Image: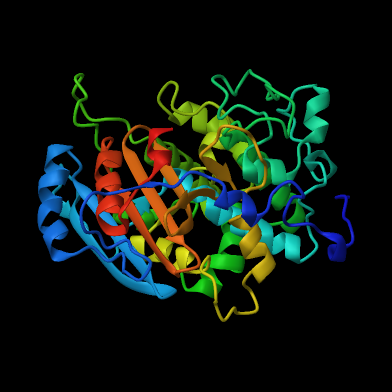
Length: 421
């Protein structure tokens, strides 16, 4: 049985962190000259920048880009540019689905906060009290790791194991003492959510967030429709070895789909035990080194989210202050906790909230997250909760960060220090 505590005693914000910490952080640098990112300005790109965007994309060999903007707390503008697939010349349009990479993490964090408010999980109870996967190693620090540690990246776990088929997962440092960005930690918390809800990750996300929010083009998993509408990744502009890069998630999902079709059970319904059971069949079908462990063919809370750019902006709008919240949305206290620094460490100019990063600007705090998968997908989302605005930029190129940085600078006026991390 999972360990539970009185919901009335749940703590969202740590005693050592408060919104006051944000005020002490250095400001992000402003661009020289006029900019739209003022206290009263919109973040919708202007015509001058949009005329320049194709040249920027070409310079960095980024075929496709999607941009969507939240203004006054709602999705106000969106547009696609270029090609979803440079080989087939398929254009980016309103139905194009991007591989969001680590932008998966804040959305999963929202689900976790919903479950916290329902009293189904406690942020400060060790995860082993809910579920202890067999691939965890034997180490006393494992018993210290909590959901809060996962969402603020203080588990001490590595990002990803190099050899997950043979290597046990153990912390590198004591949990709660240092920030170690970890996708593995999110997968463990995902398995905890499976145990609590009895649902797969995608089933939980559809029931708690995607369905209620009207995000009809969002999924952590794979099917024929997503395959047809998803962008392909393209190499960085300075890649010298040439060739077409491996579409890692697409290739892994395509093999797993063959097993799912034989079973008559869609990938969206797979939980970890389904992926474990499928491994012998998948390994026979997959090219060498494509699939190494069940996590490679399972929806992944850390990295496998796919959305249209409009859907991701819809999620951004849920983080804005002053919302008239629906019954399924998280409370104001939970929303603020996601955007509040959760650990105070010296020498940092960005901070970790619950699922989001935060940075101070001349106009106040912003929240943000980047995403990078397989060296061929680069994404960024940023929001100003108090001024109820945000922007998300999704790309299908290995040099997409050079593009999304220019988009964010041109629209917000902020030269974020986090870009130099």
